[in-house]
Length: 511
Ligand SMILES: [Zn+2]
Image 1 (tube, rainbow, N blue to C red):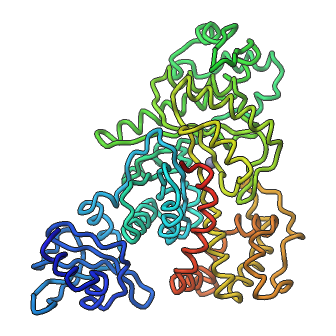
Image 2 (image 1 turned 120 degrees about the horizontal axis):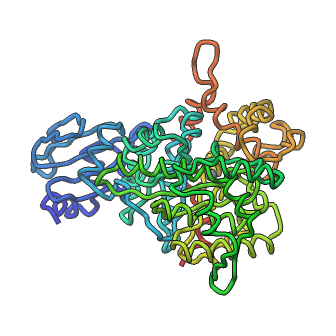
Image 3 (image 1 turned 90 degrees about the horizontal axis):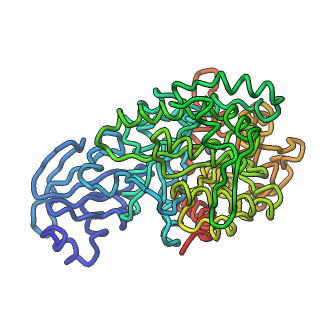
């Protein structure tokens, strides 16, 4: 323990001593003794501030305003700075636990944070679970565009939340649904470690239904040079072979291979080129890859999964998780819709393949609120599972708003009803807008509960981008600034809403 810390502790409470010298409300878990300085996060007028207390002034890479302070007659220098990018970057250097790590094949949960202020709530839920690594910086390119955030914003928000909560156990950072080499560059520049590749634009969904003679033509025309194979070598590798996967046998007929190769062949070539690009860009820096084929039109059959994984292996890719599209409906922010027994049967097959060809984790995309399948996935996959959530945390933020500012929530709900039809286009949802609860149909007391109604949930879920970017004729934000102001002024309620909802997601996977 440093002299400064000993001094602060001698006052009874380091938190109160720091509050006395800084004039900030100090987050007790944020206090770090680095040996030559005490770092802490505080808050005044709903604005978070970084504090550094040392023997003498030293700027380093931090952007701080310094002042001399005395505590019991001893002189210190106190630096106070904003939660900005320069300070987040400097913090990641000074306190490595605030920087992301490679998660590997440990059980993990992706906790996307569209507003960038949810991490403390997420971590309070994580503290109540065991054996799960949180992936705190996680956003797809699409969601970044919709929320007008950059990879840097996403990364910094995670750093600040980790610092505030004093989360020392490590966290991942997932650049989600990357489609192009430019997407990789964009996220690599901000220090992301986990790269989720989404080859959906190269998947031929028609191959599901094409006649066999059409498939044969398509098969011959695949980018064989990029696949480092020939039509004949690939036939030989798969047709008539059987794989023994933990007692269950899987094989491909010629038609199975033709369909799988035509559906995914170009996507595999794309994934291989994305991977080579990532390896180049990352150099010596640690990284990990997720392959996601969840956004296809039809479920990934076990033999397709087998084909994809063994082809990627042959092409030299290494990955730590893979997201097939599972059977049933994974709609946004609501429970699984489908046959649980059928899900269980095919999930077990996907697990067997992931163990035999990896091991790698099975990733559950659109994993929010799929409470009925968590016990199944946890039991069958064991360590090899990654749960990915995002939009559900925005909904819990709205629940907090409904509690503390019913009028604002009613406005957002009315807007969501108006915009649902337009905004639902790129999401898997089935809500009937006529069933969405009307803002004036419930009392203030009942208002937070409208977040539990299926259609209302989905409508609020898919309209987040429009809500956050809506501007009036003068270019002023209509909702965004008020939404942040309300949540920042009521962060305890916001964190509590997140904690109680996210804990329900992670508990089924907890040790
Ligand atoms: Zn996804």
